[in-house]
Amino acid sequence: MIDWVADYWASLAARRVTPDVRPGDVRSQLPPRPPESPVPLADILADLDRIILPALTHWQHPAFFGYFPASASGPSILGELLAAGLGVQGMLWATSPACTELEAHVLDWLRDLLGLPKRFASAGAGGGVIQDSASSGVLVAMVAARERATARRTNAGGVTASAAPLVAYASVDAHSSVDKAAGIAGIGRDAVRKVPVDGLGRMDLPALAAAVHADVAAGRRPFFAAATVGSTACGAIDPLPAIAEILAPHSAWLHVDAAWAGAAAICPELRGAVVAGAERADSWGFNPHKWLLVNFDCHALWVSDRQAVVSALSTKPEYLRNAASESGAVIDYADWQVPLGRRFRALKLWMTLRMLGAAALREHVRRHVAWAREFAALVAEDPRFELLLAPNLSLVCFALTAGDDATRELLDRLNATGRCLLTHAHVGGRYAIRMAIGGATTGRDDVLATWRLLASLA
Ligand code: PLP
Image (cartoon, rainbow, N blue to C red; front, side, top):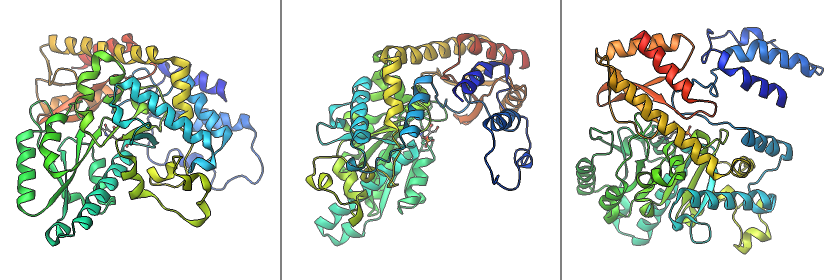
């Protein structure tokens, strides 16, 4: 099976990036009932080649430039294999101590590598945890924030305060997972104030201040704000220090969603803007599975006050009670997430960090940032194209000067070739093509070839 995966990787460049299939094509080739007796592995591999591969979007393809990358690497794949092979369930420290301790430890390593503040270290009141995704990260943060706000309300005992509806803030370009979290947490999607962005896609500070002021004047309680570091549309970084300043009088929980861009903090020269203001955040999360060569799923979330999360999410059914938990000396990660059970995800992070080393991860990020600048320069030099923003890290947003319809049509024709995949966003009211560089197999030649293809189709 490992050989099959290696052959697949070797075959990627020769494949179409996206499949040419219609709804139902895959299911129509599958038998209606499962087999009664074992099927030889050779037959299963043949079906993978015949039925599954032709209907995949190849996220590890060197010319995959859509969305944001979903990483994979040899070391991380081996970590996944180990996790499956060991088959442990790490809901509590007691259910597999190494599962918990390795996770706490590699997240301390990672915090250090990214230059995140000490308040997120497990040696103090904070700590890190691996969630499945950034969406779970923001949900956990919001539930902890709600708990904190509610408890304070209860303690204060004031009639006005206890009646105050909770409101949250995020920019219009924040990820839709903030809305989803507000719905799930019972705050309500309409309680998320969508703050406009400035010309560079960053949360507009006067608009935030005005929204907070209006809410407080109307008797509402600002309890949560999500700052985006690396927006999905164009990679914009919200001004976290100023956001923290505006929300400070209200003790709102400040969450940072650095799902994609957070990985860049591993490079000291790129770190400044990415971690600016992190010392004022209550939670800070990014996806090593996006740009740091760790396989999906792996979201690293740090909190400065782990007790806030535990008091919101802890449950103590009798059958899980044990001496280690009761001693208070251990982490029970079930209390830091929505599900009870959990996979041994730390293994793939540990394997990636150890087998590649931090220097190789830095080079991985640096190369992509350099190629994005090169690609952006080519766009800027061609009079038919317009660079809509200077590249943010390794994301380039551009359009045809001929307008939105022409740009949309160019993107459709480009992707129809099957030779690359790029996706779109709205940037400054314009239809933009996004070139998101960050794949594990991508080389400079793939970036330049994609530019040549674009230029020839324009
Ligand atoms: N936040 C940002 C800024 C994103 O770009 C994305 C996805 O691309 C997400 C959150 C959601 O990520 P996940 O799939 O890990 O929930």
